[in-house]
Amino acid sequence: MVVLIADDHALFRYGISLALEGLYDDVTILQASSAEETQRIAHEAPHLDLILLDLMMPGLNGINDLKKFVETLPPVPVVIVSGSRQRSTIRAAIESGAKGYILKSSNGEILKHVLPLVLSGELYVPAQAVTPEEVSQMAEAEGSPLDENSDFNPDFKSLTPRETQVLKLLTLGYSNKEIARSLGMLEGTVKVHVKSIMKKLGVNNRTQAAIAANRSFRGAASTLN
Image (cartoon, rainbow, N blue to C red; front, side, top):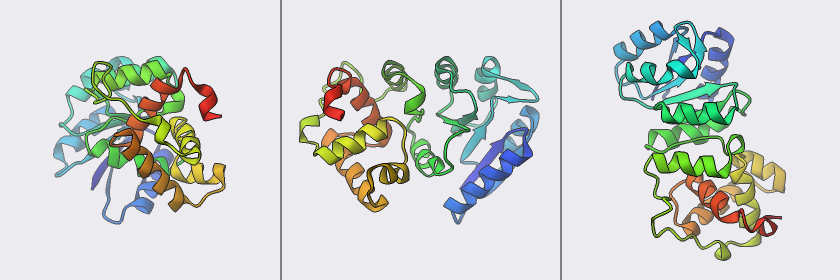
């Protein structure tokens, strides 16, 4: 896997590089510190798979420049890595062509979940940073199978009490490791629960499960407590 980290802070690029190298044995890391350098490397790099992009660096002045900038890049997924958790910024990033949005305050483990999701063609946004309505709107804009007009009808009643607890934390953006720590479980057990949850809800990934839960649990908060 070839990943381009575009950020004007060398220490941040170093930290992301270490996280990626700790997660993958076959990852190749490329680095850029400006928009111009990002464009050049992205077009020159063979077999580029993913771009992790900061919103603020020389040549890229925040969300207002993002759409035009993404259009200048090769057709590979772009994931924004930013310190801003403003809902309007996250929505605008997705609408501008980003396939994911990671908060810089997130645990490095989040990459283990986000990268496979985005590389498979799915969308990722931090559930704790947006309202349920905004998550649904962004997913629908991407042609999500959870469209309001579809026949999607998840069976939440089939979830066990423990699976319901796991789903609640999943919707808050917790990683498997964080869920395990919060509920006093083994991480492997959490993975089994997540897999069972997705099967019972008829969804393909964690993001879709979170969208479904946010949409359906709004009127049944007591079920999650």
